[in-house]
Every structure is written in structure tokens, then in C-alpha cells.
Image (cartoon, rainbow, N blue to C red; front, side):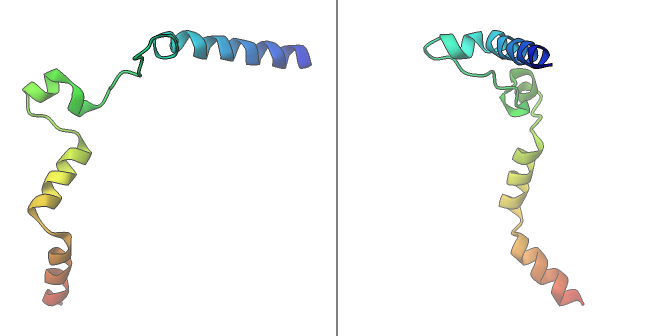
Length: 74
């Protein structure tokens, strides 16, 4: 039982180490940015991620004003 757990932990450690070779063993290593906004192809098509779209919409419309308008209609 303990041998199986030890082997499982060892395999997990080796897998994580191999996946992060570039991150762990290079000077400026970092995980790749897989964010939609960082993709050159998406930028060329003017496609943004949901959080960027939300930020842009909130800059255009003040949420407090929306709440006050909805309360005024009642």
C-alpha cells in the first residue's frame, strides 16, 4: 500500500517537473500566456476576451447610473 502511494507521488512529481522544464530551469522562464487577448490572431480580428469587453462596457456606462435609472422607473 505505501509502495503504491510512494510510486504515485514520485510519478506525479516527475510529470510536473517535466511539464515545467522551461519554467523551472531557465533564467526568464514563465508559463505561456494562453489568454485570448494575448493571441495575435485574435487581435488581428479585433476579438477580445470577456473580461476586456466587460471593462470596455463599464467604461462607457456607469453601473450606478443604470441602477438609479432602474429605480426611478419603478
